[in-house]
Image (cartoon, rainbow, N blue to C red):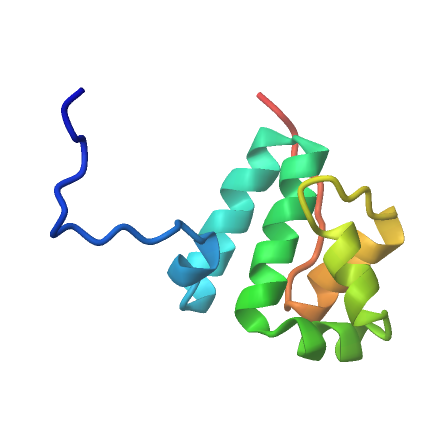
Length: 101
């Protein structure tokens, strides 16, 4: 069987957080995720943004436990709506409905 990756090629794991550098990156990312509407994807995306901004900082500004935030905002997490709104607010975002076409 042929090798797919040459020996001199370094492969690193993908992490979305590495691409969330600016407020514009974060805003665009969250907009796309919220358009999709998948609750698990939204929770995971908020976790990614919180990690990009610093989970301890987000936990402090939301008055929520850091380890609880990690658990809520992961792949298998199911955060309460109040957690989502508090995290969104701490990240400088609101929730506003828009009419679907």
